[in-house]
Image 1 (tube, rainbow, N blue to C red):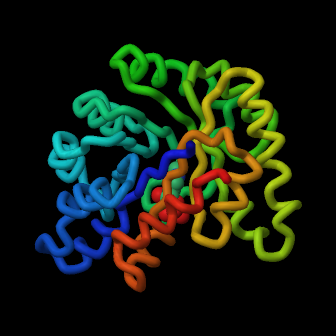
Image 2 (cartoon, rainbow, N blue to C red):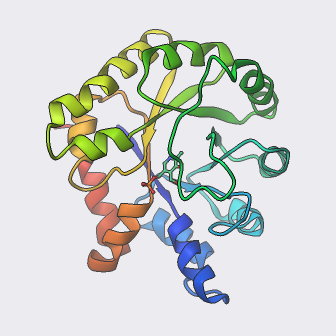
Length: 239
Ligand code: PXP
């Protein structure tokens, strides 16, 4: 079954709006796991405006499920990941100061760059995933980087879901079939929510993990974190 990794960046964003420690990011991670999250994702950006490098250090010993650190592999990020050795690292080509991730890797142009970084992480025993658009060429070339998995960037699916969900999912099905046929594991994330998640997983059941932050934390304002995590996990059940 597809695992739910909860991205807790938004909790850090609320905390950082005031300074201090409300809400408590470490406690939130513990609670997410208690309520059924099968992983915790953090995305420390270079300006540390959400999750900070200190958060990563404090969270690492607390996580009992799967810890996924995602981000652009700057020298500082690589050092952070190698120091704290999460179960998985997800490499994302986001620029400093970027509002949120908005594109996947060009796995042809950055093949050598990715390959050398991925090698370091794999030697440290860390599973690797790279963020890619649902583009068959990019998926095929991801294999040569040595990555264990790809994370399909689902924003385009989420944007078109309401108007034409069959058309919206089509490139993702094709990309996932290619990834599967060449032995790459598949994660997915970005803008997944309670409306669009179940259809995505029904159509692409081989997705191993989704990482969800923005919509899930927003839903928790209305339903509470415990209920919300149950609701998202229900979307992942295949009947
Ligand atoms: N995957 C990656 C690589 C991301 O950068 C993000 C956002 O930080 C997500 C997944 C989660 O996206 P969302 O917050 O829209 O659920």
